[in-house]
Image (cartoon, rainbow, N blue to C red; front, side, top):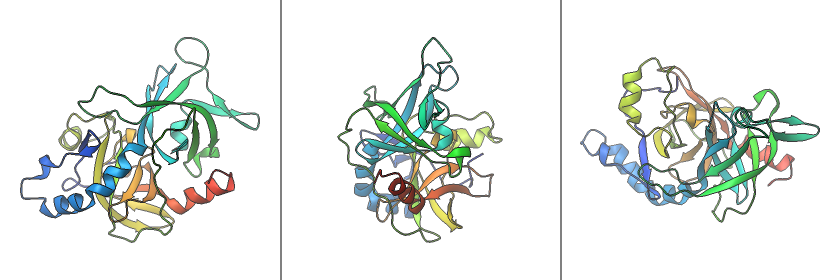
Length: 264
């Protein structure tokens, strides 16, 4: 389960490259509305670089999770997301055999997938560059078949302070294992599988970034964006129980792994 607080942690629809705060204009969330409006321009610059990883040839998971650009042709996501369609092979990785049809699975990232928008902006994933063994840390790097033409996200150089205001940006998927289904529907409404922003706060840093943004399993791979800078402070990978904490891999860890592999 990945819903930490019952109130004050909504999921906001992304439409036409911006986000909708109308649901918050009831007077009870004025401070949150103000923070989001102040950060609107920064967030709108980030949104195009975040996409939904879609699979073909996988009968179980057509929507694998969320990914985002760290350069114009390299995507960051979770190892457990990439593991759905790729596997170690020799000194590298290859796409898994198809579970429906013949041949091998294929993957692409759709940088739109917005509620109410039939348009797509898909780029094929041509190569799996790296998947962390045993998901430790839970990171994978993917190469696109072509330059996306989209400005990548920036990695924060310092860990976030406790109480830093952030958003998790990704593609939540309805989760039958969430204990409080009514609460899940209240927060996510009909936004499942579409691009959303989930505002929250950093609740601590233990080498891993702890946060309380509302997320579901489709949010695996979501960037955690600092409202003040627009930089990525973490890569969401694990949801906690109600009144607990969600977890994200620190931006510094991502940067170090990219540098080690000559990707940054």
